Length: 130
Image 1 (cartoon, one colour):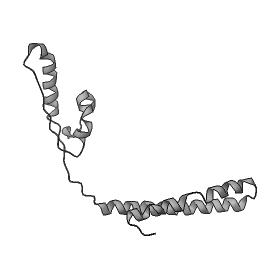
Image 2 (cartoon, rainbow, N blue to C red; image 1 turned 45 degrees about the horizontal axis):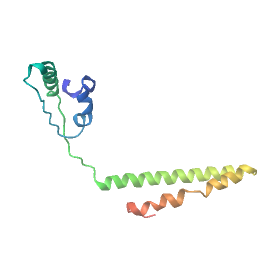
Image 3 (cartoon, helix red, strand yellow; image 1 turned 180 degrees about the vertical axis):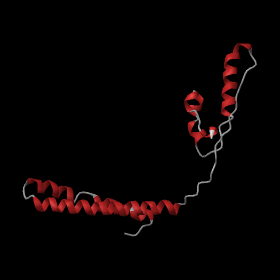
Image 4 (tube, one colour; image 1 turned 45 degrees about the vertical axis):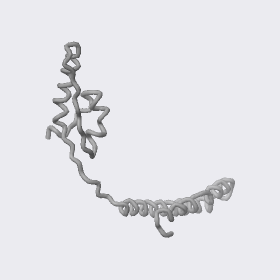
């Protein structure tokens, strides 16, 4: 399909409009030309660009993801992070049990530091019960 590729490098204008031309939106382009002899080269370049740009086709589709979909993604992310936290805490306890010297003090300071309080604090704002 020849119209599927948009040659963004062909002009500065196309690069500026990259998001609009390649995105999920309707785009209108207007070529402004002059009948002045002094602007012949610029008018010719504008007409060449407009001729190429008219072949660009975009497909607009309605966004169908709902808020519930996003919340379920966040809930899954929170569950994965909690699992990772538990795994890391287990590793930390194993490390503490394996070393009885100064390293255990540094691990102890890391253990109580942040995770549960901060992770759970965001859950009520998402409507998720702990």
